[in-house]
Image 1 (cartoon, helix red, strand yellow):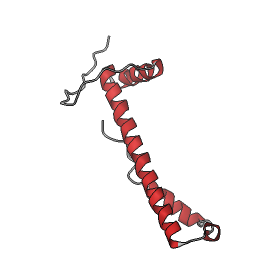
Image 2 (cartoon, helix red, strand yellow):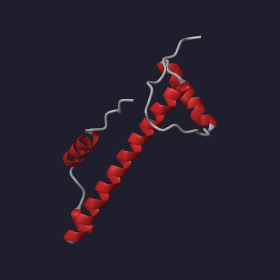
Image 3 (cartoon, rainbow, N blue to C red):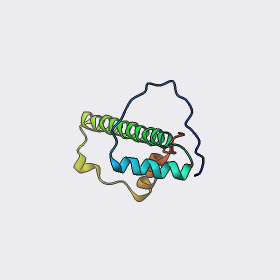
Image 4 (cartoon, rainbow, N blue to C red):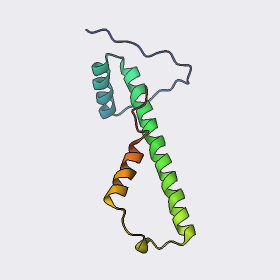
Length: 104
């Protein structure tokens, strides 16, 4: 049996979780791929999930702020038109900045 590295000790609170079989399978697969304990894999998955949640929240807040600005300005969405291909490409490139994988 291959030796796995343990997760660094944390000063955070401890908790007990009941996991679905799918989450356990995913954690065990990640643990095997990384050579870490299942607990460490679960922490990594939780950290990634928390990061994705915060990003989605940030995007939703920005969307709401922008929509409020459009409404406040009295802009008619029907008259706004669609962005050009170059504008859309630039928007996608800007949105992708800062979406690097988090350090676990």
